[in-house]
Length: 366
Image (tube, rainbow, N blue to C red; front, side):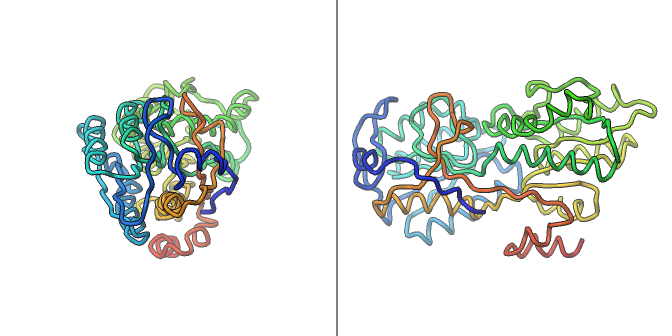
């Protein structure tokens, strides 16, 4: 992935906060004591539960990046059964251990206000990773792929796949979104609807169920069983008899496979289904034409981008960031390092995965 390198925080601001570029600490207004990150310091990484392959890969990617950069790593996952309080406790523990930077893939970005305030007060740099942390000024940076663009790419893929596989519209489509406790889920959905809403308005796309708001289409916990259950219910209520289901907007690969399981069981096979994360279980489905598309977001590069930012701070450099309204956490637009997502179908999979031996091999096998 390539970072969008746009000058962000000014050198004057960085110098005013700390010679190393670290933000000042203290109250929610951002005042307080300064700290300097240096090589050998502890870097805490708090990740959510291992609900997708992407999160499983993240831990190993961070460990290597942190150690290669000359820091010490404390990497922890939240427990799937109790993720929010578990992550809150883990972040507090990292602060107690003296972490100079805390990188957080939030289990629920709306419930970490106290923890990030404590981290700032302790002198740590707070970096939201992959998901933004909401309703607080105590987040210094956000490192992620351009998630609005992810949604746009998913919608564009859905329209392209419908045209290729179903001919001219109108098309019967259902919409799925991620979990409401994930700040990214609404951004993905909003990006997709930026493309799809005009097609709904002009009649090209018909959402047979009428369920088009995020609140109606969200998938609690990003859990496959929840998506499969909802798809089954939609099919039994709205797609009886000869009513065709032409396509489904799915926000990630795990949910895409669950949706495909439900459609196959109901005899509504071959819908155009989107995805995200380039999970190894979905690559063969894409190459076979069962799942139409995915989005490639290289987890290793995303982890490396966060550690590169920490290294810049340790070297006294000004991090290169951008400010985007889609990274507004409710209190501030968080300065971000944004990486570029890649849309993948069977037509470009081998090329898209070059450099990732495992995924490239899967794409070649077809």
